[in-house]
Image (cartoon, rainbow, N blue to C red; front, side, top):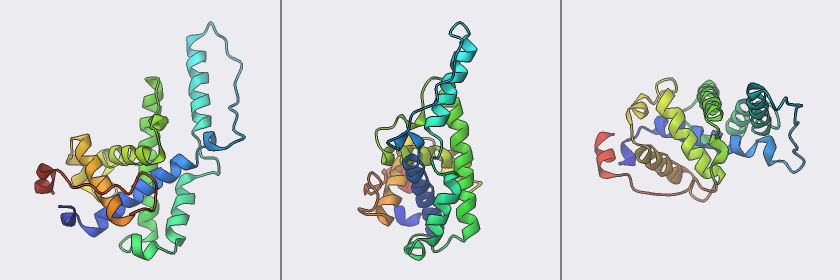
Length: 191
């Protein structure tokens, strides 16, 4: 039951999801005038080719307005609905949760690039936010105060929790994040 998840934990899950949704929206690739800087590459050097590819991906997916953590934290802290959405999180906890999520995500994204893909390949910001939140909290739940999330091995279970929390707190507020779904029975029993 979603009701068994502590309110503070729900806020961390929601905050992380909102952070990744905003991070997706803030990519340079999303701006109309974005054109990557293509470096001169020695096409006979495989390492130079890979490095250039990584540089282009890094540039395309970098935050167009500086630090995503600071920008989204400021938005969350100053937002008129802050008391409604995050009443149990102080400013430092908001920044810490987003900083940890950012660090985990960027590490995972570097690994994905080495395999020739990107987490940004998701079809829309909502899907991206849900997947990134599930992975970040699975890897760093303890660091942000939701250690039980690290024990959820199945992706579909993590996704169901994130969607349920988002649907409870954000009905019709962010595209792709307002899906209300019941949690699977086995998962309800483990929370």
